[in-house]
Length: 494
Image 1 (cartoon, rainbow, N blue to C red):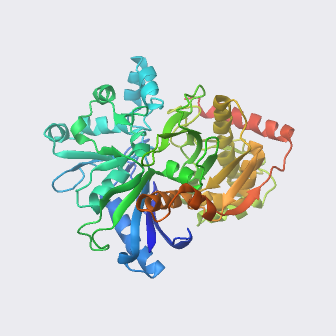
Image 2: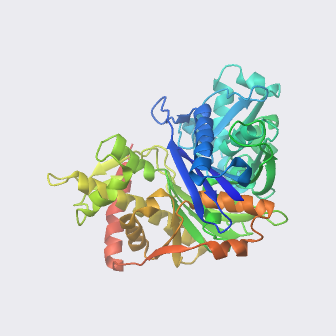
Image 3: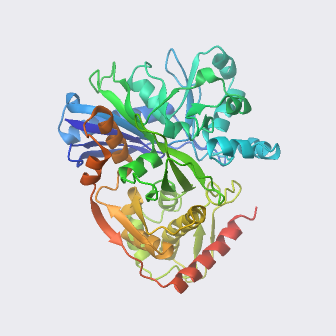
């Protein structure tokens, strides 16, 4: 028997199949269209998401050379704050999914800040008031799409992040649930109680009738029904937001252990155990997961909105190369960036700046600059923005991290991982399986049905691929960070 993990990401859908030894027997991926209706707006077609999931499930079964009947359980992990509303009867979305990167609700978020609502929101949710999170997006759909508010009042609509939408479709609408990790990213759940908060619902004008039930991250959420590509009765037994799933997939089960996922954005999470640590450095306090019969596990989080998306932009927007993987060879063809700086604030700046109005800049150009220098500057920026986040986290914790586990597609880039270790001043450990987001969803699903008996059993099957050790001096690191921070300042001048 096998575990299937659906990793529904921002730019594509990956489906992985694991055996009991924790080895990957199949992995398939498909990108799908991004929709940009206006500058700063980002949407997805929910039907395109669903089509990519169904197709990848079929392809994964073929790649693994197994039948659907051999799937013991399914785990789901997903782009988190992206949200959509759909009709409960016909299951059709009322509008496109509004993606976590979308900045259309900036003015409403600024209004909340002016009304001094940020303190109460932060106390209840651990989040900063920003368009990033789901609540203001749901409000926008309710306020701006004809007839939707009336339908919601009549109880005809359901709301959910992508995990909830996929669960709904996999179960023919019999299960309308989410897990605590995804719920904690909506800005509608009180992270201390684990329940939807009536004051927050009122603040964002979201009817409670829209909301899914909040459940543990591991355990049976529902079973497959009426699908052409999977048999009935397969339990969906694990759900977690992508970054929390990656933390679980990296087996960072103990307080003080942390990881960085290099995906569309880059996200650092640090397990803080059963304590929700408030951040003074503009980090997010978030729910990592909750296992059956256990207390909530919390994490500190910092995210840079653009990581792999910057490489994608160099590929598609500027045409510097044809495949994203080619950036490593191009960047390694020069010794340094020749003074070129790229701040990839293409959708504003995330932690620790939280500047929605910041914009991407390329500066320090001279006549000698080439596309290789820009490629290297891009990789350096991806590492340097993580250093800013890590520095802020260490201030909150009052201690320095000894190392960081890394995953995600760009973690395969040796040059980038070495830069990360050098600029961070700490070891970077890469596992054999860098698709740890999917691994985390699979582990949670496996635990949910007893496929694996405990987290200790999972720790034994986790394997290290390579450790990147620091190769530069503190003085070189300090000088490089100084130049980076000067460029960041320039990106924030509107």
